[in-house]
Structure formats: C-alpha cells, structure tokens
Length: 283
Image 1: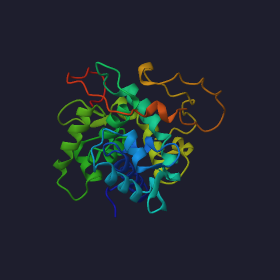
Image 2: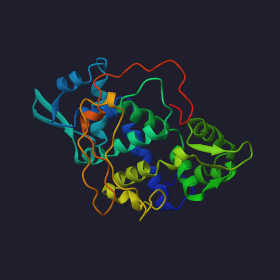
Image 3: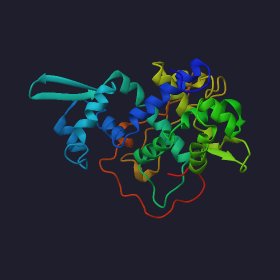
C-alpha cells in the first residue's frame, strides 16, 4: 500500500528505509547488535555486556530482533541457547560508522565528547521522526517545496496543514531550512549530508551491496562520490589507535574502516544537563 503520492518505486524505497530505521532505533538495539558482533553468546553473556539493562528488558528486545531477522537464536539443547548475528545484520553493521561520521560533522557539539555509539543513537532518533524520511526525500529531489506541496506528496488524503508539525520538528532538528512563514522549505547542509546514510540504508534494506549506495537515484552521486577514508572519532572515545587507512583503489566507494569495539560502550554515559552549542542538528 502506498504511503506517499510519489512513484511506486520511490514510495517503496522510503517505506523500506523507514522500516529499517524502526528496527534499529529503539533504545539499546544498536548496543545489543554490537555486543553480538563476535561469536554467538548465551543470554547470560549478553546480559554481562549490557549490565545496565534491568531484569526483563533484554529478553523482549532479543525476541524482537530475532523476529526482525537481525539476531539468530540457536537452541543447541534445552539448556544451551545462543544468540548471534544473521547475514542481514553483518551487512548492516558497516552502515553504523557512516552514521557516526555524519553525526561528527553535523550534530551540535556538547560540552564533553560523546562516545560514537551515542552519536549514532542521537542521529537515529532524528531520522525516525514521523514523516521525516519522506519529507527529506522530496526536498532532496525537488530542491525546495512549499508546505502545501509537501503535504500533497507526503501525506495525500490528509488535511494539508498536518504537514507543519513534522516540518517544524525537522527545522528545529536542523535538517530542513526555510526563510520564514510562507516561504518554501529546503534541506540544510546537514540534511544534504545524509546522502551517504540514506543511500546505504536504501541499499541494505533492498538486499543490495552497500557499494550501490552511490548509485541511488535521489541520494547517490554517480561519478562524484568522495574517496573512501578511515572513520575516526574523538581520541577519548577509542580504546586503541586506529590502523593506518588502506590505499585508495579505483572503483565504487567503500564504507569507512572500523572495528566493533570502537563503537561499543559497555555503559551509557550520563548526558550533560546544559544546553548544547549551536551549529548543527539538535540532539
């Protein structure tokens, strides 16, 4: 069933990306997937890695991730059950450093450096706002559009004024710009910068290799994609120095090099209560 008035292929693309974001954004899901990035683990081993989760929180999350095809439950014996990644999750994990790279370039900078995993979680919370993907898709493809035009495309059949709450949220988040009331809307620099993230999520959700991201009809830039580089973060977020980047080879852009341990934090740090500095999307 169509969710927008866009062409069927585009509508299906947005629906797949929205569904992918809905699977990984719920709190702690990314951390659970990263905890499982090695050998399959028993429940008690996973609980030990994510010890801050209260009793009863981990099991329903694992069950949901299994239902979504991101975690595989293997019953060796009635008393020996392990959980591990599916091939689908292994293909998804390289998208995470792309999100972290976008966050470092575009999110507001807090008073203290945030671990990369928190950068990813903050970014995902912005991208899963209601109608966010569809609005960003339309503005990327059209350059700019009025609120009424966006409403006809993004939420056909609804009162056109219903477009303004999600639009105001995207403006507040720093992903969309406008010159004022009655003026058209357009992507901000941060919104434009989401091309790599959305292109990769689109490729993954369609079962294609991430190298297809540069060929996305809306977010891709065939022939002008940036050269691959090593993903880096604030030094205090990394347990060990990154390896030297591999030589750049001709061909499709590759996702940044990374290690699971560079993103995974065993405990969430307390967030500062002070307001964040201006200059990027709000957390």
